Image (tube, rainbow, N blue to C red; front, side, top):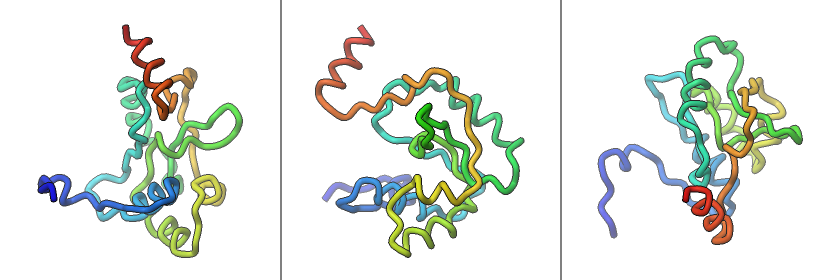
Length: 142
């Protein structure tokens, strides 16, 4: 078994066969933090823009205290839950949702105060999951 670093030891590991459930379960495990917000990012977003993430981060202090998440909204209308900020205080609501069998970010977010983050180039949220998509990303870098 591979030894974990100190930083890894502080991060809970969530294992599940249901991918969406792992994200929900992981976010529900947020512990007390010196920060009000946690950035949740999918690991397969190769077009992320540090400048846009920094812009979003700078907008958090002016967010209403009742807002539990700041997320981009897809042009089709759904939230992009794996590229945004969650207030640490959302933990209780999300943990209760997961405990009661909830499995959908969209359903949970539909009952929460969420603020839309500005995003004009949705290519930033391109999700790279297949070998073909990886070749496409690599081709764009050359």
